[in-house]
Image (cartoon, rainbow, N blue to C red):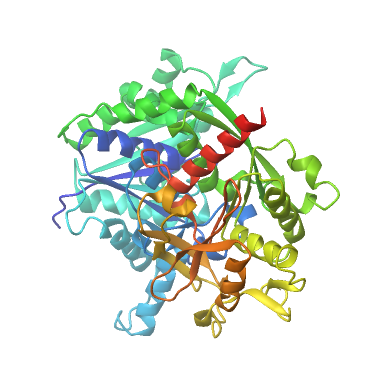
Length: 540
């Protein structure tokens, strides 16, 4: 079996949430800066087909790719770091693997053989490992294995990695194991035993890690590194220290300082094609750490107790704010805590308001009050997906006099359904992967705030919704001062609304946060923060 693409597998041990996704994205960034073409894929051990039906409280946000795949939020990190798009093939779950194998079995493709975890499930996992490398587009594919080594559900993936070493041959595969070195303050020492046990579990599954990346709160002294190398059977220079960082965007430079990329390239026998030395990245970090102004923005949603539910929005504010040398202080406020009596108290100190995406009725009234307060007090407002629909409903009720205006998602029998179910959604009964998903074109109206932000008429943006603006009411809205400044050219679907006589009041049916990256902050976030800054200056 001939392979031209090199493969790096990243596993994790001791505990979850060590940051495999950030290490994968940082390593990929370092390799990319050396002219090596690289992509990253995530293999998740849970049985859901994709994260589209998972509760954001449990799993964080569901990230949507250009081709309409609902994926793990780590794919957002991959795109933001690499400034490149991913696809459905970059995120695979146990559910998808089993689904594929069972579908083949039902078609009779196994010719009556007994279908087993080994070889059928592991073969399917390996086929997906190698899929992105088939056309020779990438020099290196980094595969992040979700979960922890030792979890029952991770075993088939670890077995597939073991077999991959045999398939790919020497110098074509590398295993990086991310682990934890806890510091016991009572004993005043760093403890290596959890890492030793984690590596031992990996060895029991037949996989010897080549490089250990050790998450730690304290610097690892040389004697600790030597101990880890000796007992975990890795070279001393392959014990990489990963100290806690102020920002995830510091991690590529910290990994470069630890020479992670050099170790990887040496073991895979690949050399630099160019070396950009990450100049733009360093410039970004310089601005991030030295802002010239600050603004306070309220992010209003119903999942605020887990900030990962709004990961892409939070990162988009960092990208856009940094490009303007502005520090955005985000205040995550639960929409359930806002009502007509306290809305002024909660939002009066804010320079801007963003109403976040979401589904269902819970927290709706709070979002409506926030939109009304921002509209009436000329506070810059940004509504995304449901946040746009909220702005439409509030405007219809309080400006147009349609007191029973609502969305049929909230009230199927409302008299004025200004937001209603999309035509193609009406016969759908299944939840997973059935929304309007992925990139669609949009045409902007010249002279509008949206057009000024993008500086062009034709754009594409990513969607994740079932309900849409009801065009039956469009003329009435425009007569009252709410414009449709962006529409889908094929279906006439309203993509962007904005208020004529307001400093900055914009709602988008799509999700701009999915397209913001470190090197290309999203224009709508940039213009929103600019408007927020101008409003703050005019106030002071």
